[in-house]
View 1 (tube, rainbow, N blue to C red):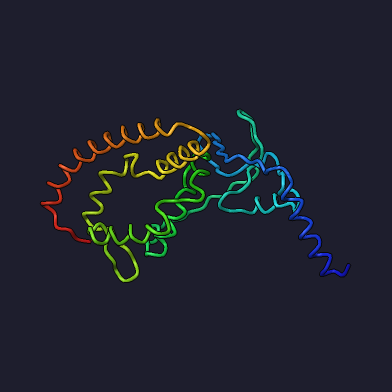
View 2: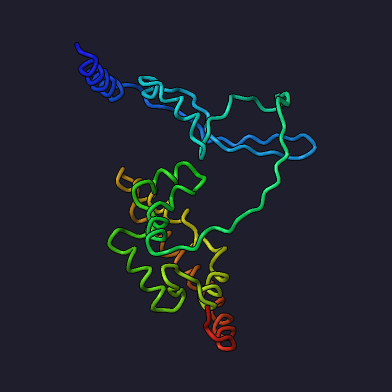
Amino acid sequence: LSKDHQAVFDMVAGRMLEAFHQECLKEITKITIESGSVFIANGTVIRSAGWRSVFNETEDEKKDEENPALPKVKVGELLPIVNKVLLEKQTKPKPLYNEASLLKALETSGKEIEDEELRYAMKDSGLGTPATRAAIIETLLTREYITRDKRNLIPTTKGLAVYEVVKDKKIAQAELTGQWEKRLEEIRSGASVTDFKAEIADYTKTITQELLLAGAGLSAQLAEVPVTV
């Protein structure tokens, strides 16, 4: 075979081997090191390379800056300090959302969930659906929770007040969607629909009462403060 033909053959053969190879098993890991101060490293530990070993893609994992590979360590293991550097930096606020970036955030919100099972349950969903995400943003604008400033979306006083009310409640957390997606998957596998409906009904009653109580104080607060950016 010529060099080009060999490259095509290797690629096709490799993909075929990957398709029938074992799964790649990895752990989402957090290592906490104590030495006077506490240092935390987040990343992944590949337990079994599986199909990634065909093209040695484990090396790409190590280069992934957002989710770097971590060495295998044991609880209580003593580690030598190989190098140390003192850096002085200033944190920067995250950029304001525009409609495109907010749509993307809704679509990929499940990726921020720490629980691996819930994150997997949301891998193909996110918050809302492709048909409803744009409508969600328009509803926020119509109800004056946010306003447009050129390309950016800015929260209003009203929006920030509502955020303060709901931010610590389960209804405002992406994990809730993940839990429901997981339960729906269990129902597809034969779990009881009746039990899930009962849980939803109980939760709806609870959160409605909580929001009604919080809303009473919020209404009085907003009556005294003009809605401004």
